[in-house]
Picture 1: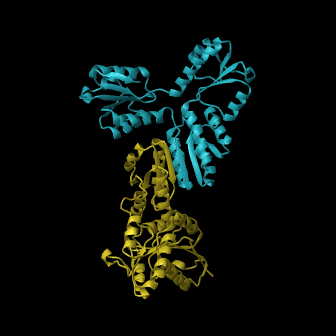
Picture 2: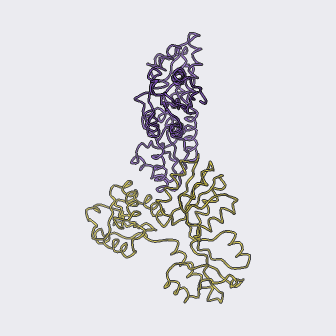
Picture 3: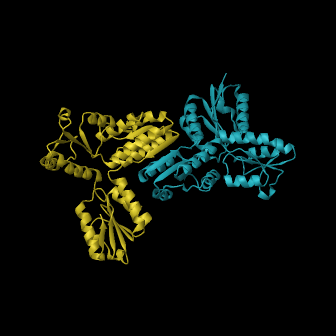
Length: 292
Length: 292
């Protein structure tokens, strides 16, 4: 019987979903009578914030509310290490829901500093994730700049070795422009592509999955840049790859003699479309879903 | 009295000039009765090849001419290390006129291979410099591709760590595009910018000099691309600009009432031709040479 393998990050943001799960778990502390706060709203969705409130989890309004009887949930954006140490010094229990991909940016910035690079952090100057990453740069004794627009970049051209990272949700075209321009002006550039918005992770998963399966299905808008990129990666590694928008486009011919079927989807593809496609593949092939 | 101002980077790039000097030195071996060859023409300029021939230095036609009584001058492009070892094994004495900027590309490619990068070498697939650099990549046990056009780049996107270098005479805009695009597709990119800026510096100098002088003279082959580009830049900024190959073409009419005369030359124009032109201008105008 054929098998369907769905890429783990097909179509949704892993970091926020994980933060919500960790918050749900942390609601046990509320039941124990502790004060449980999130350090800023976990997600920009009032219904979800309301739901968490019912579980006894509130958004922290004032740092004076913090003491040894407090549990503080750090959201997916992360915070500067100096801040984290200060919170711990107050005796606050920390539940760290920093997205692992944001933790990867923190590791990348420390690595670039250790290797002697002047750091260009492509991102929004006041974004909480950027402020967190900047804290790791300073903590490691590094030097760098935050680049929001191309003019900000000039300062970097004075340095012979420039390392470039990005806020996980940065625009790829701007990142590309920054990287290309820098390479023309300095001797050595090291780029660690930390752009996520689930994009890079999904691409990595497709790179792993596509060559291992008999058919690879990519779901998402034909005019969606990130979906098209996923499809191109799949196609380069497996000629039997197909880009569809809706289940009706699935052609039974594609699945003849297929033992394994891979599935992924772009960032803007709703879960229910992914599920509808999986169900249609099951009808065509009588396959099992082995992972999701 | 009129003044002649020569653009500082007029004529040969540093690497070619150095190769010619090393060849002139090596002519001593010819006097000692050895056979002295260059491994391919040192420069695409028949006058210069003719001059070297008079010094006893010929372009190698057939590798069977090589033996222990031979001195072989490697030109500025460099050669693959495997080839160099094979030549040395034959007992040939090597005069290595590989441009130091090209040696820097060889070092960069070996460094990238050692650090585990899949190498993207931006350059022309059959260019001797590229073939030399490719030899260093293979010698270090590395893997990579030569990228001449954007489509060639796809292969690199299968690799998580990509190192990028360029042929020294690569077009900067294309290099920028390759670097930026790669950064979007792979996890980590290390770029060592090995483009030599002699060409762009020469153009920049003409852009500054031409509008300041009364007459602008550009010296070099009428079929030389880089010389023609220099002339076009000059002409667009100063209508009294002239492109000549030899001093005999100078027309005294051009210099009537001229207070300042600018001079530059393309990459393949030998110094002695530039000097002959300057001397002829001095005869015509009774000018002083104020800088070179």
